[in-house]
Length: 304
Length: 304
Image 1: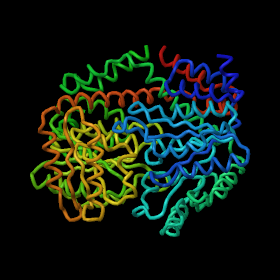
Image 2: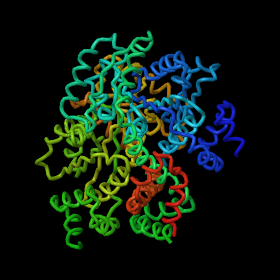
Image 3: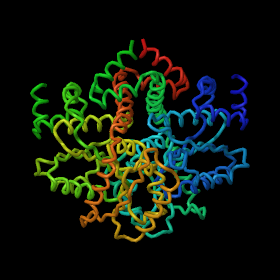
Image 4: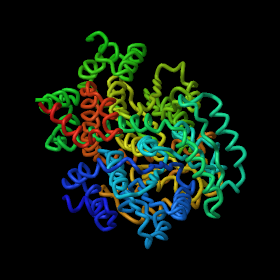
């Protein structure tokens, strides 16, 4: 274990890959490892990137990696994918593009599928971020499809969050409906060469004018055409202006507060796998017992 | 309490509204009430309706209500909305259309906002379904914005699930990306007078051809133009064909299995509100303690 963590702290990519797999499979070894690594973390900047499907997030992430590598930064990427039982796993299309960094040892990319009903994705993303931070990554990009509560929350648990929108999607409910307006520290209008970019920017600004953030920050709106590499440096620069404001410590505490909730939730659920849900479900479906009384009984068992 | 539950069983709309509020606010009285009501449930058909934002779900639901009312059915609607802190609550736009049923005592509509980090929306939806079932609703429509894991799971916990799609949204990743393909018992292509309906139907069928459901059901594809009232009867008829197959009992057991997981998770979290997350988050952010050791300690406290 001590050897393993030393290798990770030294940036050994094979030790890192093995640890990422241990985290994803929830191996017991992962937790001891993370305990050892944790004191060596706190250096990496975590950047959340979220937006509607089809907004071009993967291409944008690809360009951000190139830009950060040009600056000599070590980069980690955690791509959170919704799982589709139909296709038998995470949607891989977007990931394939990232293979362009395959041969670059300064880049570590991990795609994580959602875990279905019991959740735990936020806890796993936290573990993965701790790992990449300890392994010396300067920047960790956490990419999520920002369409659901879970994904949005994960993107939010970053030092800065970038929300990617595209012009001309219906009545632009894309952002507002999914509740991602309020988590953006920086807006990126990608595919901004398409019609409707002006309108979208006006709409973002109209919504922003309705209320003021507690921290006083007004998230800038950056335009990009990621496929052409346009607007990438500007987006990074906007993120850095946000980070330079100096209340990062408050945000880190707030983020850890949320992460601890997720971690506790996940670990409690793991602990109670011996409960017989199937037999209880049969009793409830047949109206032999009511679900509320069953849950009461389980909570008693858990607490004593 | 006994009076209250009698009034609900008798269909008193004011008692029903008060109970819905008690459930939403997680008042202690709600749980005793639900225990009393539960033995009187099991008669209502629960129909989940989900789909991308902008797919016209609310209009479709509105038309379904009209159709069911024409048949003399009592109808309950639970509309699950993502919350936007920006607007200070659930997005109300869609709901306003439903006001057309305001004066009809045979229709009970409740909009529920998501509850943020701690989740609990599936548990609350279950409670609300139990309530409406006990109050004599023949059909309970559960409408969700099917873009995130949570919302998709809620729609799935129904006797039948309708997935609403629209033609011409980008590269039709709308359905596939969000993982809603596999939960549909019936597909509705709404706004089917718009270009791309044929292509979308071909795509749905292509994906269906890739694998077979365990129960052998091939979800039919119905076309609708909800604003014109077209395809509504056909959609209902497709749902009824699905329900007529007779393995509803297996599905009910599977659904209760999932619901019990959600209910346990929610109630465990409520029980442990005395943990000092803020102080722990400060310790972690300052790297004075590691989060894994903190969680271990909390689990010890909870278990003893």
